[in-house]
Length: 346
Image 1 (tube, rainbow, N blue to C red):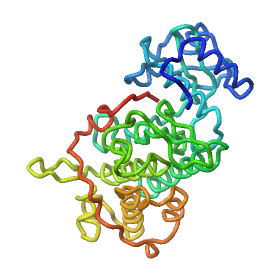
Image 2 (image 1 turned 120 degrees about the horizontal axis):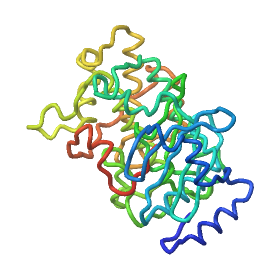
Image 3 (image 1 turned 90 degrees about the horizontal axis):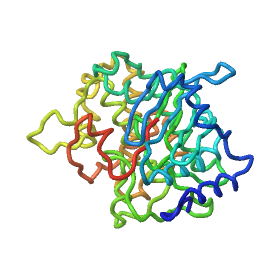
Image 4 (image 1 turned 60 degrees about the vertical axis):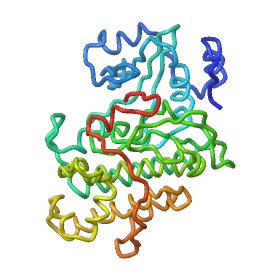
């Protein structure tokens, strides 16, 4: 376990000291004020504080997440530093430094010019009018899967992210995706596949069934696979204004809707698909996603298998069973703001 509920200032200091050279660079809070030009440019805001744009002395741009001054932030802070300090991958955001001075805590990341994937998912939203093509969407989906594969298999200690969603995927200048926000992460010894959790954590709409009800199975890397599948379905649906809440008179669950339209021409019509290549790309993303959101964890593929399916041929994929777990409707705003447990920003 990374953190105990009795953790205090001395515990955090002891933890940071134990990491030694593995820990990222430590900054003073005064440094953060200089880096951000007194917090001049705000990039985003969430339940745990604000993210500001900054510049280091060497001229490189950074994103600085300043945590709120309230109780209960020790666990998220430690999770972030502990988990991301163990990573080095093109599809995982780089933590460059941190601040821990009394109640003042901040995390300094590499700057991602294109922000989060969330603003590119909902076309026509107030956030952006930019539209990503199907090839780029597929590349982003594969990149995220590769990042998860690294977290699950490439580290000495397996890292379960447990809050995969568009808001937590950042895009660099080339739209290369990077997984961010490790505030809810759990570290799991490589020889173990299931982690223990006292409370459910994650975001409504992406959280795996077993996370909030142990009757479905144990929480494991397959829980990240479920969240990933829901996110990719949202990438496909939101790409051209498919609205799972379009008919409030019925309890239409989005995966049900897209499953029902998988083999019909309506899927292509609603998504503006203009070529057979685009059609195959979209169908492949949908089929793989539906495998990822199977109710029983053992029925879901590993994230390594997900990468193989996305990079393979459409003809090699089998249609998965229809998802049996229903979910209440949620608005676009609720999808990123309503949560089971703690949420961090960036």
